Image 1: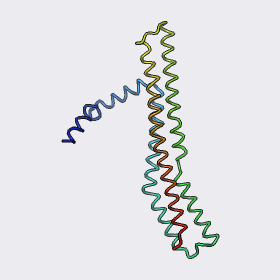
Image 2: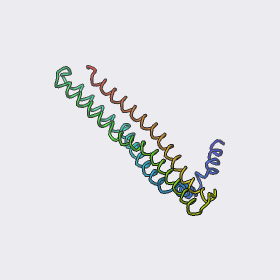
Image 3: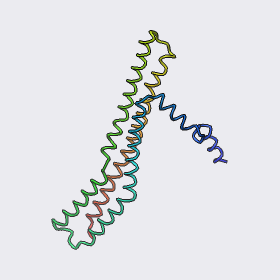
Image 4: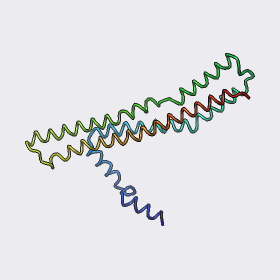
Length: 188
């Protein structure tokens, strides 16, 4: 029963219909060229986030277990050389875990800027219509106002989601690095 309700809700919203692509295309056209640029930035952002999640979930645990195993096999844990090896592994983990995090942060910061660029281009369009037509007809200005508001909204939504995802990834990377350091500091 619940499945039928959720499917009918999805169909009524247009998510399961064959016209979702047309709706998306219409939305992108209403937002103007800047919305396409924003979509490209968001696509790159999500590709990098997926890469980081896959690294954290699958590749880093293998590397971590190799470092811990190599550390436990060492006879000497207290010498300067042993500590240098341990610090080297922790530094390698730090660099590997934080790879692309700064670039993700930059992409998040670009999203609201592109939204504001959309606002400026939309308002220029409104003023252009007013100058060419010599009037302030609401029908003539509607497309320019749509052009101004849609990229701004999309940029803010993308930035909010991006800030949340970036902070979660950074927190997870810090936690994994601390756990590795603790594991390597412990004696047999």
